[in-house]
Length: 78
Image 1 (tube, helix red, strand yellow):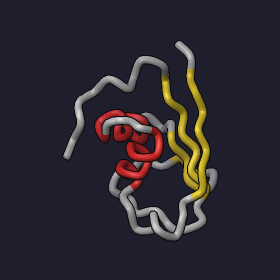
Image 2 (cartoon, helix red, strand yellow):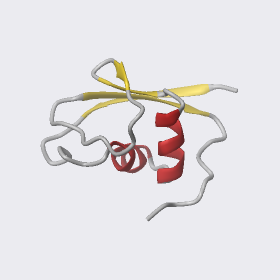
Image 3 (cartoon, one colour):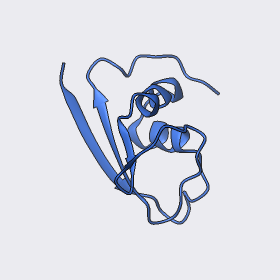
Image 4 (cartoon, rainbow, N blue to C red):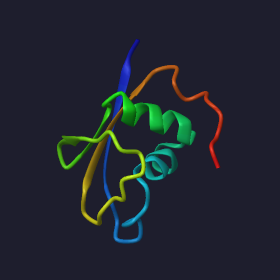
């Protein structure tokens, strides 16, 4: 299995958004996939592994995420 890495900075407009929602929206994934990525330690904010899907992001934070191939086919969580 291969992993793709993504990296982006949180904009002022995105500040306060839940981490799982931000990752899902930015990477075009379902929230369930974004949540699994966080739970599995595949997401970092400012270099620190994040394990809380509901954590609110801050403007200017640098988010890094690794997507394992074959993980983008889960159902959407509203």
